Structures are given as C-alpha cells and as structure tokens.
Length: 269
Image (tube, rainbow, N blue to C red; front, side):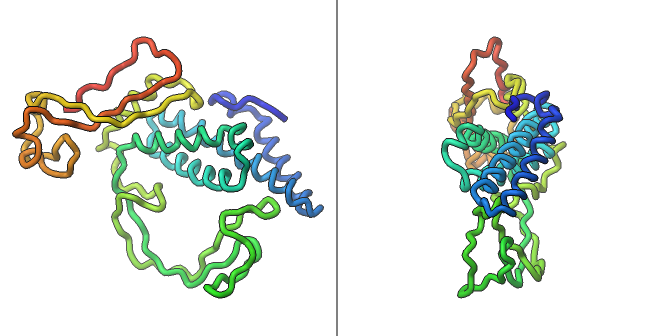
C-alpha cells in the first residue's frame, strides 16, 4: 500500500499502523519459508516508515517548543538512519528520503544549545550475538556482523554482567539523550527563528556557519568577567574587550522557497 507521509496530519492515517503490522506478518512468513531477501526487505520498509514517523513528530515537537522530547526523538532517528543506510541500497534511501532525514537530523541537532552531557563508564563481562547468542571472544566470533540484518533482524551485541564504574561529564557523548542542562536556563531562539519560517518537516533548508563583525560599542552589556562573545573560550576582558570589533559566530539559513518578510535574529548582546 502506498500513502503520502509528509505532514503531521498524514501520521494519523490508521493505514500506517495496519501497514506496519502487515510487514511484521510478511517478514515472519518469509523467515519460515527461508526467504531472507524478502524478510530483509520487510525490515527495511518497516524501519523507513517508523523513521519517517518519528522525524515528522520530532519536527513538530520543536515547533511546539517541546525541545527535550524532540531531542530524544532526533537521537532515535539518528540511530535508525545509521542502520537503514548501512543495510539498504542508494536507490531505496533516495526513494524513502533517508538521506534527506539524515542530513536534517544533523542540522537540527547542531542548532540546539546542549553542550553538557553525562556519560556512564562501565565494565562489561562479555557480549553475545543478538542473532545466534554466541558468546563473543577475541578469538571466537560467529559469522554475524554487528549492525547488519539477517532474516529481517538487526544484529546487535548484547552486554552481560555490566558493572557501573563512574559517571562522567562530557561534551561529546555516545548517548545524546543524557542531557545535563535545565532547559529553562537555555536559549532556543535559533530554533524558534527557524521554526517560525518552516511549515512542514520535509521543506528543504540548510544552514551555513560563518562569522560577522560588530563594533565593540555594541557589547557594552557584556561584563569583563563574562565569556567572550567570540566563543574563543576566554573571558571578554582578556580576549576582545580592547578590540575595535568583535567577530562572533553567525548562522545563515538557506531556504528552497521564497520567504516573504523573513524574520531576523536579534543581536544577542
């Protein structure tokens, strides 16, 4: 069955739930019949459909300013994208908008002000294969590759006998969901600016990172002990306070369609 799936309203189509259920049934039948190619195709179709649903929902959560919930959904999308891309043809990914979604996930994540995360340090007793349950050792591995699909099932390595050792604070986490920030203290104005223009999740847009120079007089509200607006990592008093101009990071949004009365971002200082 083919149905349009580009807007939030489309995600409410009851046929979607039916389609996902049918894909699971057909996949199970293919596994029993020994038709691995058909089982894998069912996995791809199901994952691509679920990915599209989550992406659309994440986009509209951002529009509703539900930033933390959208962040979690974007990470789910990112993980699904990685596995679909690894196990699918270029033609399939183009037809299902996987490349587009993967690119826009990265763009949206980059606009978030999140920069502090927790990271768990742990010791794992051993791993087993999620396909055949083989206990994985350095010199004893099964034939299944982690991240590949076999008979419609994704191969993962299952951790056993986990011992938590520490919790670290990091800026580049393995699990992006472990955000430490309190959202009420953060500035989401860049995302607000973008969402004031975009109407639907599949509108084409991109972001270009540049810098802009502003006269030093425009930074009179910045204290000498505050972080320097140039984002160089130093304090304003020891960095740019004595310069005639301050060069600060700047974002240019590029839209495919014409945007009348495009709102501008206010000078942040």
